[in-house]
Image (cartoon, one colour):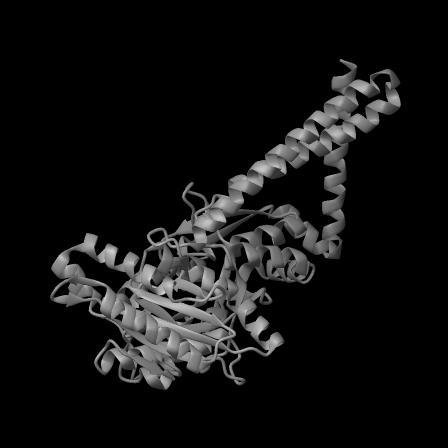
Length: 493
């Protein structure tokens, strides 16, 4: 009974400490603001369920996302509780905000129209917008490239109204969600989609849309600032959230951004793994604290408690190693193509900046080649998808035979591959790719009448290149010219 009383004492002490820490964190609020919170302890937030990774429904049926993590953190800092109400359509959210049914929108961009019925907080994240087009389309550099063309945009989004207002010659195809917009581009109904990189990439990979690429930043529109919106009657809530944003540490913000903007497409249940690990750490903390207190009061039980503590630490270490091993396996699966075993597009984007940094530091050239199997759709239609899969695997085998040890081979799309050649000049890259092209043409016929050939585009890093995307785009343009001018050839740009 004595041990139980002591454990209850320490649990109560922990709760008391946590309550006092929360009180200290909210010390930046005025008395009137703290009084307002006490009268409004629960705030209703209307959230979109199809705006991953900012706000969406997880596989467990819960509302998750970057915006929710921010609003949860801000609310926790000031002692608020947020009740999240899911909505399938953005327009329905705006309608209920106008009518006062929603107290808070935890993620939206500023427009003058919305400012008539909302108070905006300070921005908590800045986002750039990009053009997304089909693989067989020329790159889009500015909005002028979309004049007299069709652009798919989400109904009610700020960018949709901006395009309508400033570019009336563009035909806007309004859709209910980002997914529908991307499908519209994929099937040729629209020529382009304009949106942020994290959400567009999430939906492309989640729905296996492989014939769309991110072209360029929309330089005609300033980067978007993600804010929170509060209904007019709750202007004091906007002040409270602004103060909470100001006091939110950069370390916490970095954790949130890294979780959703770099790993939002992973299938790993990080919430579950994190919860298990946090629970183990909490148990370790409680037991250790209990052990320290008990040693002062009951000297004769020190040896037994230390033994128990060591056993628990061993279990925690074993569990941590198990989770680390699982983590490594999941990371490998996320970065490789399941059919061919080579790296996938996600891996390339993760390491591209490191590759460029090494080249600049060591002053060595980088060449990139884009390879595409010619008339692959005809192969699938004529011989069936089983033969098509064999062609892709055999192509990877032939390409690998010609690569140097440090070269990186990536499956960039369905039948499209990318080779990163470190410390390789443009001339050497051409010779290597010519060997690949000849080996493919001469060494792998499907039958006596049908050869498998490759079209290849090559580009090299230039001093004016700010990032590796510039090299990829030039190589992709060269590949497009190779296919357009006869196929089974190499074009250098």
